[in-house]
Image 1 (cartoon, rainbow, N blue to C red):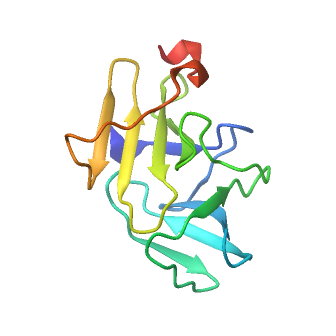
Image 2: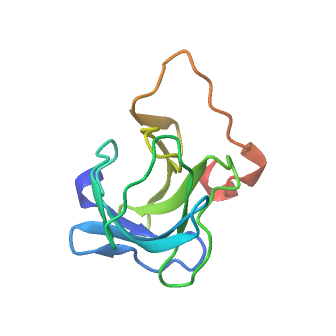
Length: 139
């Protein structure tokens, strides 16, 4: 299922999948530097490249922005995560939340029934997502 998904902006619903990568704009909070970032679409795979080439510092927060509508993709559910819409097909979509802190390798895929966890997640750690901001159709 995950290998065949397309990623879309949750604000404008346009596809963010370019070729085999997820393309986003980024802005470095501390350095006022902007560019493009190309992410692997597979949850738990944290390889990426940027244009122009950028060296992020461990612990640095990065703001991800939709390249189609220029909206900030920071999740309303938890400000430490960016949110994308993960489209399985025209009728089924999930929420994909990934950390905006460089070096923090955590991804959560919110399905109708559960939250799938990827990356370096401590099983004893509780991550808070504001349930009031969930799409009612997703509950």
